[in-house]
Length: 521
Image (tube, rainbow, N blue to C red; front, side, top):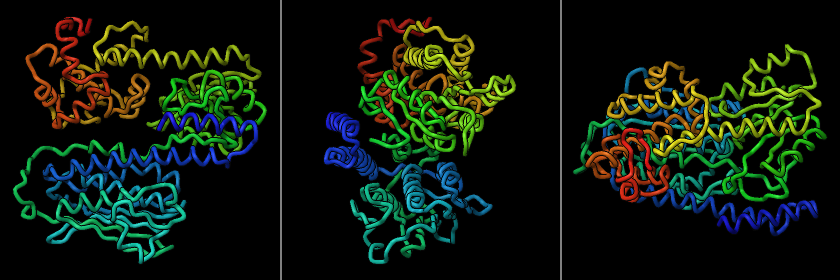
């Protein structure tokens, strides 16, 4: 599919440049090839879910905490769409027996749908209640709603209904998975809705465990779902031709398939914007926006490797944009260069105070600007390479600041010391590092490009690799030792990190591992 999509995209870009047209047969073919790729992704998720669904991993679940986990995933989305977003739970703790992963995925799917179909300024509520026999989770919205004739079929596999929102956005898999998982729990899912007025989805789970026959119930602390991140839609969709997005004519590869780094240029002066796009187009994939408000949205959507922004703009100026980027945990690792025509030292100081990584005065020298950009990106690349080499036990040749070397060493020591503790959380991690959650998140993102959870998972896999090389431990023993309960999931993550299976890794490095230096020769 990638080999189909890229030539199509190249042809469409060429056609746009030559003819100024974006509605041709080629554009339609490209759009539908991407849709097919998305369908394949969802089918793989469906297959994975169905294969895993028969084996329920039952344990006591704090439904208050589970609901809050899902609720928090959509807080930023609610702010962006100005949605009145409410979470209503009783003061006391509600507990059920169930498979944490599958209930979490079900709730996430319903919440994701609510946000998809609720307009800007709407309302979404998540409510947790109970009676003597059952626990109820209810998600209500005042969005598009569903026709009564369609309610009976929405939970069927691949069933889509006509909606002005849903065209081209889904494949009728999400609600099927919800019903599939809830049915496995002997629970129920229902929907009440009215077209144009909104919908309410209600999950009901039985209390106790008498409805589960011959299924083992453990007291292990439930883990966050392995499928959870896969359900979050991939929003890195490059528009083929828009007024605010420019991609180098010399390179038409999809962002996800190219080594080129991405730069977002924000300036309300169309001529300067076009000039900067041309300046960077040969070396980078370039996006552009004409004001800070639009620039912030594009930063969230495309997660560029670097942002270059003018300071004086309507809607939102560059200083405010820089502050918003640096205050957002998911964006704060992105370097920001501010451009200004002002030579006032106070403006310069204010830019630095807002977290800008560099500051350049107009008129700027092309060579200096491109050198500053390359320097910032090279430093980040060196850090990522240093991190990857350290994690995969390779000898480090990168020169990086001592503070980052020491920080990574301390991180490894803390995670390895707490691998066996089930109550080891990100909050505990931050406390032991002597940092706030936000500071730790930002530094980890800068060093590794990973979230805190992914970073900790990488360190656990690293520890497992060392155990397999130095102790007489097989793969299952090593994975269990570092907290992976599912050997299949451990193998999958190991391959993602090391580029080979655990057995291939042991065979290759068992005799060449230097335990004194913790490196492979």
